Image (tube, rainbow over all chains, first blue to last red; front, side, top):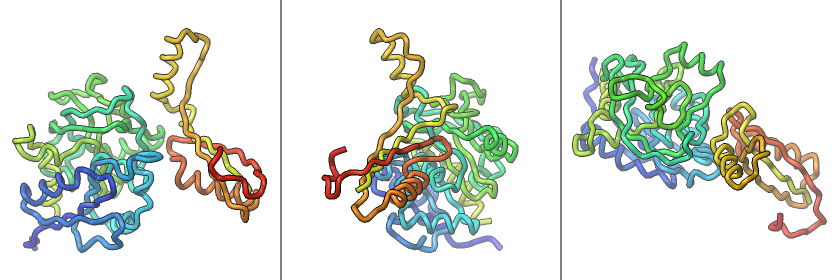
Length: 236
Length: 92
């Protein structure tokens, strides 16, 4: 039977998170769902149906991006939740945290150019069969901005083979027409990877910011498709 | 007391964009016989007087594995030195 109640998003707030309110706006005002903030010192997830780790600079990016956030009390709850199949979305710094805590494989290196890059990019949906991308067409190209200094995804060759083989690469940097070329890889990321999902399919990390592209006023509505996919998966 | 000097750096086969940029500048400075530059991090841990050398070694390893280095991309090594009892912790 279809779920009648609204989906409840839990948005994690670390000291230094700065996209938490943007996510809140996207899922409440635009998607018409519920959201609560989860403080990094909290010990429970407040009955949410999905956890979002937002972008920002948790703990000032000290040591390595996402490295200190790993030791927050809320993170242990998120690991337990994910291991039980809970939906977890990590955006930018949130993706970096997911890598540091081991919910996703690999690590982030500094951008090849050594520059902080803040601009709209295009990503191609490589796998539209996930609960985060079901509202996208096969190979659809989304226009979503990135804003990061460490988005140069790295994993060893064996790990890369597994990611590709299991269809875990969900987004790849591409041209507006969907071509995968060096010129459209903004940060040097291995195999042009912009976002990956875990083997089970319930944890997604991506560098682009869907919450910054969820209404026409912001220059693109493509990011909304990721939140809408999550809501659809919940309601079904 | 024991002091651990910890070096964390990217694994050999991983491209180091910072090191590459620094090497480029070193070339501009006129030093052309530098074959490679790698940039890493240096951390100093000063243990209190109750910690033995063996404990310091074991704890430093654990701290490196769990926090200071990310084993996916980084390696580390450290040196231990013994300081006189009650030496100021701050000067490294």
